[in-house]
Length: 84
Image (cartoon, helix red, strand yellow):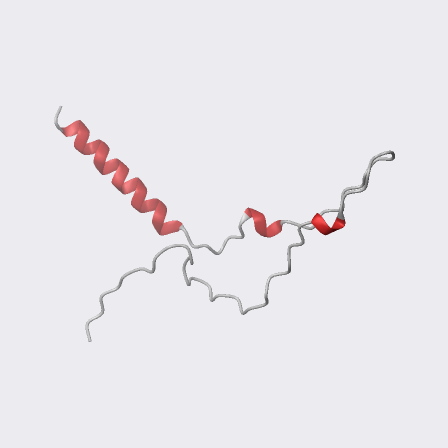
């Protein structure tokens, strides 16, 4: 019966290691497909919404695309030990 906890710990460690090796960050995120919507139309008889209080989201600043396989920006870089 002492073998069961060790097997569980080993299974969790293997599954966690397998998940981290597949993440490439090259797939588009859900929010990247967002599109601008229409302005809210106020029904007749109600006051119009104040245009000065609208949140205007600016376009992203242009920059060169990251090379494929360069990893995720929100994860620490991988450590490689190279002998010189």
